[in-house]
Amino acid sequence: QHCEKYYRDAVNHYYEAYHWANRITPKDEDFVPTPEELLAAEDEPFFTEKELDEMRSIICANCALAHMCLKNWGFVRDEAKKAVDFNPTNVKAWYRLAKAHQMLQNWEEAGNAIDSGLEQSSNNKELLQLQKLLAEKVRKARLHRQQRERARAERTSRIKDVWRYCKEEDIALGRVSLVATVKDDECEENEADSMEQRWHHHYPHTGQLPKRQQGGGGWTWPVLFVYPSHRQSDFIEHFAEDEIIALRMAQMFPEQEDEDGGGDGETEMPWDYNNEFRCSNLAVYFEVHCEGDDKVIHPDSVERLKDQGSAMRFYESSRALKGDEGPEMANVARCMERKHLHNQRKAWIKKHGSLWSKPDPCPVIQVHPAVTLGQILRHKRSVVPNFLMTLILFPANHPAHYDFLKDHKCIGIVEPKNT
Image 1 (cartoon, one colour):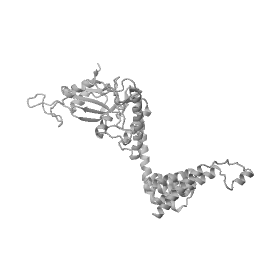
Image 2 (spheres, rainbow, N blue to C red):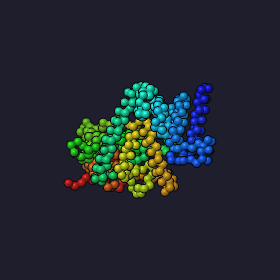
Image 3 (cartoon, rainbow, N blue to C red):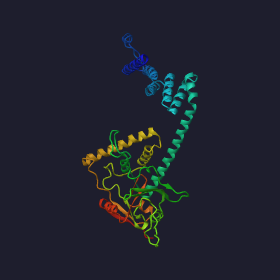
Image 4 (cartoon, helix red, strand yellow):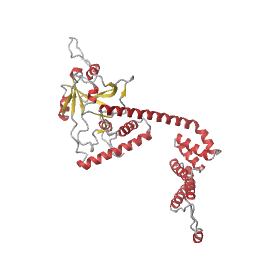
């Protein structure tokens, strides 16, 4: 305990010394003092910028050492980093920085600090021992980073390809807020329901991208079939643009014959307790987003992606929040999304007075079963949120279907093109 108090006092003294060092006004390199200034320098010495940086580097390196004795590894990292920023030739500071990253398990950063220190003093025993100890972990960390960068470059290329194609084909893309709160202390009554509502039925499928078919053919899209009447859904990873909706529905919901040859047999879905999910008995819709003023969007609404950069940022954030890039990137993405949500809330409240002043439920357009997915994507009022086309299906005579149409006005129908 006595030693800990000594080191804490030392840390405080180093902070005080650093504070006073920052208050010194440096002199120019070619400064020539007058006799009066030389006399005053005995009490108030003058320093050049380089001399000040060396002094501050020593103070920060010693402060890092005191924190090392207290095992405050985060502070060791911060102080050692400041020390090498002031003076890159400070080998002791490089060692302390490498040691801090070792204890924080930042293997690649530890390897970089070791390499930088050895550039200044190639025979430093402490750095050489640490290099030998961490060699395998540093190698694996660097290899993992290279793999992540390669994968990120491939994703960037795919996003550019998708965006270019959508612009050429007049396919509109949109996004939703990926977080439900702007602060940690905001609580939701039901976090799971809130997440699903916020991601607009797309959780956990956000992060999928349309793909070009091999051989230079058409494109396939991730598609979500949502069945609100039974709280169920089906995710289709590859749905070709030239595929007719009815054919896919016939595969998923075939007409079932009973023992007498009629069409009222048992369906295969265990949750379809009234055997209503048959291809001929289903009504299909898609929601119409981004109607009206695109500048002020309610946080629960879909926002149009206006450029390639916004599409890329949204896609990377959605992947990071799912944990694909590790906890640190997830935290960065969460902060960015919270800022975006805060700005949306602020703009909406400024214009409408309250978040409770919500827009009307979005209208819907009915889909004729004989149309292709490509016709839906290219419809003038279609916006694809999260790169994921969502179709809503109801049994024609189900009460939930009637309730849905009461809330969501049907403003049209997509019919097959005449050939």
